[in-house]
Amino acid sequence: MDLGLLLVTFGTLLFAGLALDALGRMTVLPRITLMVLFGVACGPSGLDLLLIDLDHWYDIVAKLALTMIAFLLGGELSKQAMRANGRAILAVSLAVTAATMLVIGLGLIALGLPVALALLLAGVGLATDPAATSDVIKEIGARGRLPKTVLGVVAVDDAWGIIIFSILLGAVASADGSLAAGLWGGLVEVFGALLLGLIVGLPAAYASGRIAPGVPTLAEALGIVLLCAGASIYFEVSYLLTAITAGALIVNFARHHSSAFHEIEHVSWPFLILFFVLAGASVDMGAVADAGWVTAAFIALRLAGRALGGWIGGRIAGFSHRLALLSGLALTPQAGVALGMALVASEAAPEFAKTILAATVATTVFFELVGPLLTRAALRAGERLERKNAAGDSSGKQC
Image (cartoon, rainbow, N blue to C red; front, side, top):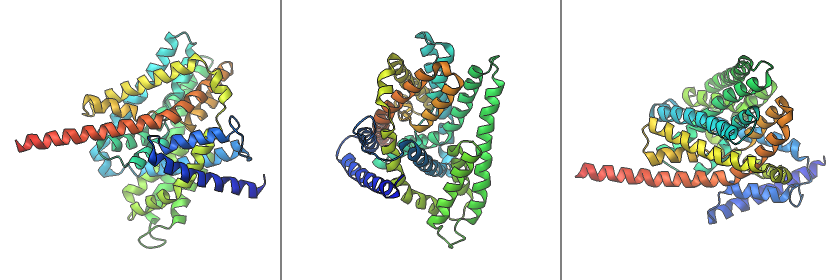
């Protein structure tokens, strides 16, 4: 690979991302959707303008960008936030995960798919895109209980998804259909990530702000993120959970915790631009076209599962009917984690590999393009609803 060509490509994509960001502010389309579409146009399925090793660099950029986002999401899990929204976060995350799995799995079985294939696709459907969800919240400046709950949910639902997907994978892959192997694999990945997060996060929480008193340096904050990403990849555990754990420890125990998150916020956007553009460029439109009716069913069932789970969890948390429904619809984006799950599932069940990969690629394209639109619409509707309810409460007290 020519280093000059690589640097020119990345520089050009960053400037293109800035232009698309500006365009997004003038239209109803989230900037993420525009960047993914731009990537599709520039990639092999479009004009094939990216003269770099796409798979190699997308993998590196995706892991770095998502680890940064996971670290920032961990910062949302402060003791104060959990006291205020912990019940809602737990209720919505568990309900959305369970409802999505059941609706997709049972729906695909009812439509005639083999049980093993339906279960594996249900497991893939549990994945969310924390980068897209958190960026939409940041882009529109959403405030209130709903966006705080959504940020908390995308920080913890990866754990539920990994455990359930591992159980389903073990049930399908094991000769006797035993769940023990799947459950053990899921627990090892989750607790391994939590342990790594502790190993990185606790010393970082103590050291934060001590190298340069009062304000952590960018090198210090980036070092935390790179340690989380590198160690979790080396030990083959979830880099998302590792970074979330480290972020949660720092926000709760560091003396100058806010500075570390500000440093990562400042540096993360260029990586996110590259991530979303390269994600679009990685799309195989041929596979999307081959996915057929399974894709349409998957999309409809996943949307139904998210809406149902959000409504159930939101009602348990004390949301109104409408706000509870909106909480599920705000959790529709899906990206790289789902594709990783699909690759693992296709190796475990090679007879279904083509269908799993084609359907996952197609649905990821849909949810990466349409998901941010749904998230933005749900959050804005939720803000209006919360303001209306607050105004009603205020007028009632005055009366």
